[in-house]
Length: 305
Image (cartoon, rainbow, N blue to C red; front, top):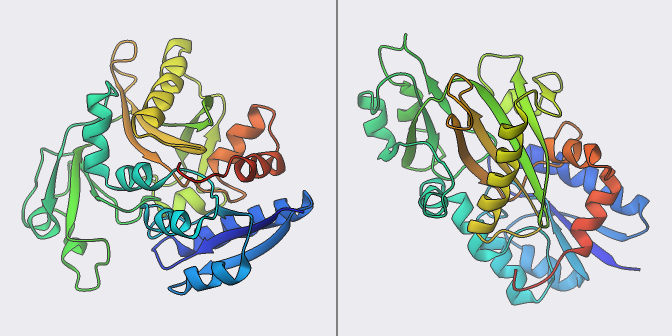
């Protein structure tokens, strides 16, 4: 019987979501007959894994240290095969501005914008309104602000002494229209979902609260745009050197002709695996049950990813 360590929790801003993802995945693996160790990741993780000696690690952490290459490097050193992307792809995808440079070079359409210090971003508008401010290395819409036309000043939350999302922020023009997302599983793009927030802006709360957003699958967009989203998601996955399952997020300005209004915002190398998460929904739509998806991730685990 294969022994799988399900790595979850950690100390990032996304700890709670990771614990929920981890529980769902561990339950699924137990249903499939695996021996499962549920590991809440802390600073002693190397010693914990040395003692457990698992056959594979299912990485269900979100944010640092599980999404930025740190944990992946440690698993490589310990010789424990693991799921999802490897050291380089994880580190690249986590640093949004560097990922954008790589994606752009590979022909993936990305929004414009720039990196500024959070203090500069708080002092004056860095871009014409409306625009979006996001930390360069957080996921799940944590620390993201939409600065609208009626905002005289940038968000002053950026200057808070208890700000924990790093000193640099990415400022990008706001792209009106639809929020789309598409997962890649191995070398296959899955279906495209349109996310319709039931709150004003698709933030952390909308993403994880049941009823915080509606998921339309398949997304009600033109067939050529749907195919292009799938193609770009796969190109982005490959350009960053990702493995396993990823999810690419898009904005689509449907006021522009054809696929001109399509922009890839980012690639998530550790997408959510909770009961309201997008990837399990896309897999289900492709005929892959939640338990089968989790089993696939574990069987796909390896070193040198």
